[in-house]
Length: 102
Image (cartoon, rainbow, N blue to C red; front, side, top):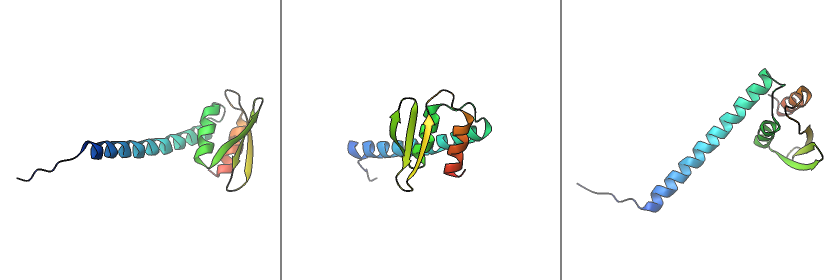
């Protein structure tokens, strides 16, 4: 019978890689769940949730002045402003949904 040895490095790399993949899959599913929630219940969305959705669609926080945070999509040049209040107003949710075309 032939024995195969596996180094600790191989197991560690394999474990880390699968963890990264699992995290990405969970993250994508999490964003989809938030989008569904946005459609169902647009008045109950937290700023952290909208931040996560916008980042998943290529937006990044460009600046914040007071309670208003601006997100910029570098590919399209699209700029969106969201007031950081909990929960967010329906108008911001509708605006984000229309911009990500969901």
